[in-house]
Length: 300
Picture 1 (cartoon, rainbow, N blue to C red):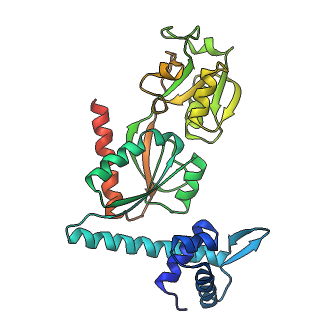
Picture 2 (cartoon, rainbow, N blue to C red):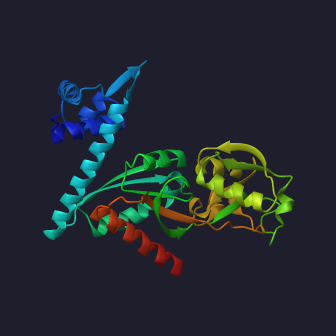
Picture 3 (cartoon, one colour):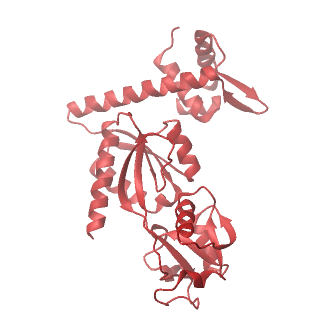
């Protein structure tokens, strides 16, 4: 079987977008050229690489195997290019990063300081819910992943770099606001607004509530911190959010942080990648940057 580097790069783009048009655009070729290259690649493999079901395209078993192989080859080539740049005294390359939605409150600042030191770095940042990040982690699509609740069924390299306290929030002016060491049991009659099941915040919160023997009365589940803060500020109930999701002055958002016994819940932000994965020099540099920033934050 003969396959060119360009064909493998094109197929990898196709496997990520599941669209010939999007793959052609990503690789800066015309759609007819992309279709022809994919057809020639399938002929070389001797099996269909994708199929159409309804209006959607799906990789076949052979296509999934080729995508894994192409991704590994591209990762090795990227690492080689960055290694050569390092020998030449240059630091450039591409950083692929997937983070859960709550991490959007601090990751851009960390990327900003990293890119200020290394201005030739390109960054591809995916901000998804936890399930989306875990899917990308399983498929090894990125260099690094950031979340607060790593999956337990994968062999991972884990680096805790920043604390992630979870707070109970109420509307500003709520009768419970300003009370000190409020017993959790006093919140039993109050309705709660929580993140969707499967989110890291929800997993940590549910586990903590269960350990305290408390069952919150859930009014609604929402898919983002901003929606929860808006609903809480509107008086629809109490919420549980990461401190990172709160502004410097929660009152500016119409919110108050309750001083409840057993809170804040202490958890951590983790940088993850698959065990055995060889980090590119750029990814290793960003991992070091995160750990330094975490240590600096712990000392302030």
